[in-house]
Length: 229
Image 1 (cartoon, rainbow, N blue to C red):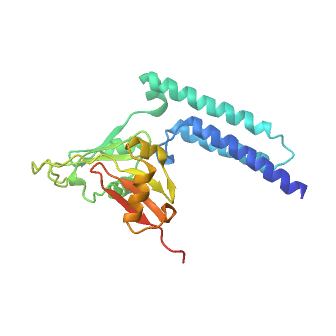
Image 2 (image 1 turned 90 degrees about the horizontal axis):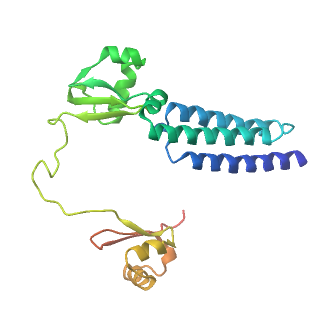
Image 3 (image 1 turned 90 degrees about the vertical axis):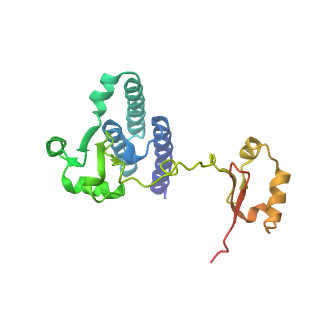
């Protein structure tokens, strides 16, 4: 029983430490991590697991290195932000792998980036034909940015010279039955207006609302909660 309690305690402490460390390191998604960030994330994960598996190892032996690695990542990120040479040294540069529909074979070879990977990422971007691509750039994070030829891009209202109204962002007012009062205040609205709008939509209570959002045209979209199956 004591053994299980110790493991649970250590797991909780290390979870909090790692969570704080990752929050301090920023909001990048895993696919957007730079190489040095990915290495630090792996090392932190490994350090967090060791004292859970070995309860005889002091938990501080993991907490200290995690804090140091998080601090190191913050320092490197700050230096990279301010100095282009350091940024290039640590993260590299974006590389053009397709130019005017032509795959740069020598560039792929230098990057050790094979055709299967290239074609797979092109398909993920919605392109199956290399000749439709004007430029494709392999970013430092490993993601592929694709710029289609003008004749291969979807037609837009701008191409047709059609005027479109401003859309802006829809502001969520209710999420899973919980009112976002700060957003109500941002829109210059109040609880009474929201409650009345909910009733007009045929719902008895705000707790019955799964989602409610107000767009820039003043239209309120309301979705009720589905019954439990």
